[in-house]
Length: 283
Image (cartoon, rainbow, N blue to C red; front, side, top):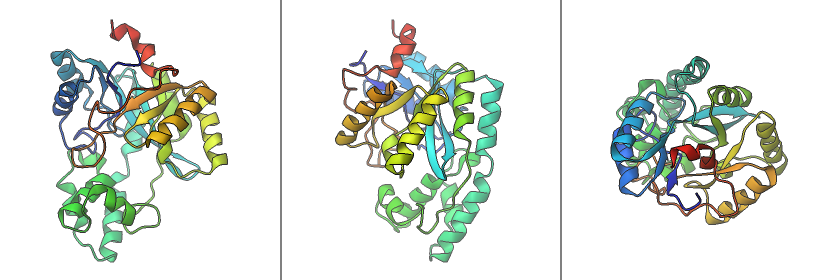
């Protein structure tokens, strides 16, 4: 189980990736992925095409989504895996979470214009596959296009982040709601890239405890957003809290300087992989 090439976190044009679901499937398969999940932000509209493409390629597939959550004033992401995408409560919750993105995008563009960078709303729209899901990533790609920054990772050091020009906070779903939607749809809730969140040590522990109490079961350990040292740090946290461990590239685009699909190290062998819960798919 540990040595399967599993990638359970990536994005398509249905949210803020640059490739259609079918193309992401092809790329995952070409890179040797054996079990794959497409986890678009707050949107499950790509699942049918992703599943069909994976099956045509002979690659095992899990339903997936990455839900945006506001916790203690911070934005946290929760990945759902292995759920029924036709669950009405999940569908309604995701629709509600997506609402408000356009107004936020217009406010982001206004803030960037005040910082001397006009036209960013129209520029970001060129990169949007789903207008309901315009995001910071689309603005970042436009800022790279017009030469404001050399690459996407550089954008978030100077713009679009808390305290920087272009940053506009948004109230997302509650943690309790996100976990409930996933669980009630028969899935497993997983904390996405936990090393990315700017939480104090006390808040970090409180968040993990609350997530577990709500029925959250998994945590990403080996992810494109973590350093090798963080692989070890979150492997220990997975053990200490009894979480299932997950692995995912968080792939959006080839030029985002993040690992490609299926290119991460294996999980540490002493952890319990989240995909063991779906072992029937792997026989």
